[in-house]
Image 1 (cartoon, rainbow, N blue to C red):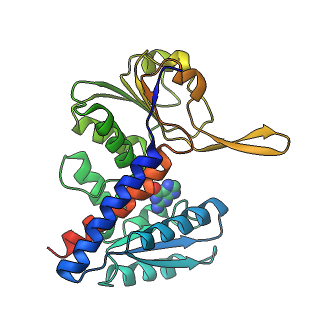
Image 2 (image 1 turned 45 degrees about the vertical axis):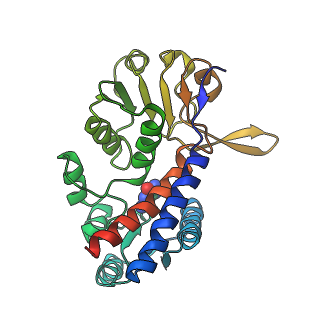
Length: 288
Ligand code: GUN
């Protein structure tokens, strides 16, 4: 293996310490305690794990955590009323509605009902527009975590060739906007891209966010490139066991890349740390 490992777990622990320091200072200097509300509709097991973990880490850094668990058959009006009340609650500075929502609910409508100033996911159409036009926005947590690791590893990203694989609203598109903001030359590749291996081979920075286990092999990677693997896929590991892998085939990619994030322990921990950081930012902005 030639690549250095970008240790997202350690990086996230450092960021959470920084957040905890800001939270302590807000309490001491202004009597403020940032609050994060998480809304979960239904019983999706993966979402329940995420929500529990978010609540635990929110409390660990000294913030208030509010959880709203609603039945899977909750109607739109009920959910919108919960969001309306959170928008008007001065103790709540950040609101996150866990996705995916059950099919009968319109995610766009629900997300756009959140006060943009409390939209710590950065999914509200106002924040999407602010990010796209280079203005001060709430930035989606997963791409923000990727960017912080890239900045820490490289310093200046200006002029680098970046290829983002995946065009989701949650990761691919905002990731591309952030890299563009760093003056990278950005390509968004996706399932219809012609010659995907050739496109990826141009990249100094590869961000893989497609949700397909190990689909990017090492021979797509330019020697020395930095690989950020956003994928979290559970695969069969034999003997009735499963294991987590990314969208990148780690072993073959690590043999050629300059640096790579592991799965688990790469991007995942950074997402929650950035959510906590966004909540502190929202609290500071709300209080001038
Ligand atoms: N589901 C998977 N990732 C996310 C995320 O970043 N935010 C929310 N709200 N739901 C998610």
